[in-house]
Amino acid sequence: MTAVTGHSDTACRKCVPQCRHRTPGSLLFCRKHTTTRDSGTKQTKDSFTNAQLLGGHRSSRVPRHELRNVLEGNMDANNRVAIIGAGPVGLTAALGLAQRGVPCVIYESLRTIPREQRGAAFHPPTLEMLHKLGVGKPLMQMGLRVSTWQMRDRVDGVYAEFDLGLLADVTDFPFRFHLPQHYLSAILLDELRRRPNVEIRFGETLESIEPEADSVRLVFATAGGPRETTAPWVVGADGAHSTVRKNAGFSFHGFTWQEKFLVTNVCNPLETLGYTGTTYVSDPDAWAVVLKLYDEQRDDLWRVAMPAAADIEDSVLLEPESVQRRLRETLGSEMPFSLAYSGTYRVHQRVADSFVKGRVILAGDAAHINNPIGGFGLNGGVHDACNLAPRLADVWHGRTGSEALHLYSRQRRTVALEVVQKNSIRNKKLMDERDPEARRRNQQVLRSISLDPEKSREYLMETSMLSAVVSAEQIR
Ligand SMILES: Cc1cc2nc3c(=O)[nH]c(=O)nc-3n(C[C@H](O)[C@H](O)[C@H](O)COP(=O)(O)OP(=O)(O)OC[C@H]3O[C@@H](n4cnc5c(N)ncnc54)[C@H](O)[C@@H]3O)c2cc1C
Image (tube, rainbow, N blue to C red; front, side, top):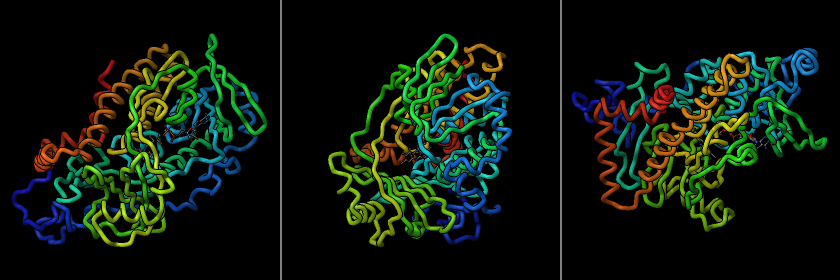
């Protein structure tokens, strides 16, 4: 709770009673308490070999003879779970399966782990799951821990602030953790390379799948020509344009937002403008999501995502002067922005009709996609993988029937529809509401939630996805 009474008007809530250094524009906290860099040992890129970061084969820690045994003799190549896609979801699912003694083969069309500018915010339950998987510690030797997030009106300023510290009694990770998702992928890949029951095949693109009596036939395009294989189970973790989903006949209902999203990374100290590590800026035309990003070299890297007209060519939208103008208008500052990245993308809200059909299972963006406001995509995908792995392992070992997979589908699809879709759409509407009266009402409601400890806690449980994990487990 962020109780108001008893504190001076300018005191930071975490330094009370004496602190007078509240960040300009922040309702509750001083600069020291808006974003904290992890004080643990810093893992540098050099801790991974470059080949590991890039997904090359040469750095494999599995001795060659061991790998050959696995592939040629000790492991039936046709009895491995096939995972399509080496994004964060496919790699998480693979590690969860491998740890339970299930042999897997991961197929990835790229020659490296994707390192695009994508998900960069981890919620508390995701950190809990990654710790259980054994990769939490290396992950959290990097990154930023952001304990408070802020909601602003672009014109009127901050109207609510939330302190994830309120959840310290329910989670070991009462903060958002900011780290580009490819760091997670590199750590997972590193772990997978140590496991003799996992093979990773880069540069192989799934082209088609065909169900057979007790298996699924898969056809890949590779540099050496087409390649066919079979697998008893296929996990489609091949992202939003999933070939698995399309080929296996899943439908993917929903809609596409009219506007594009313009994503920029800038190197400027936005704390000086009063932004906390996570800020949502409301405005009918110039709303934004502002996140502080982790970077090994510098401490002033920020992501600013804004809307962009769908009918304007990218070449125009991405002209440096046009991006500068948008940043100045949105962030309310005349400072010159040091642009490190800019790009646009289309955003959809869609969920597959089921996450399991026969021997084909969907997870992550292949199963559900949503706008990035609230940071549910990457997190929800990791939750899918962690829910799926123990159930599929039980099925593979013959300890249970395939009904376990249908429970996975029911639990995760319900969360996708009732939590992720609902909240991400609500968040976007909150940010771009055009009706001034409705906008004022929404902001008042959020302000009163933020000032009430019980309501604030409930809101944080929902927005950090903690309640979604609990409610999914209750679905039978
Ligand atoms: C700009 C942006 C910002 C985002 N910000 C956030 C955020 O802050 N928080 C958050 O939670 N989420 C965020 N997301 C969403 C998040 O990035 C995705 O939800 C996440 O990447 C999904 O992971 P995935 O493994 O399911 O799919 P992907 O990461 O898309 O991985 C799929 C993999 O499959 C491979 N593949 C595809 N087709 C084939 C094929 N036929 N054969 C073999 N391999 C194939 C691809 O090359 C890729 O490596 C953001 C997304 C974008 C675009």
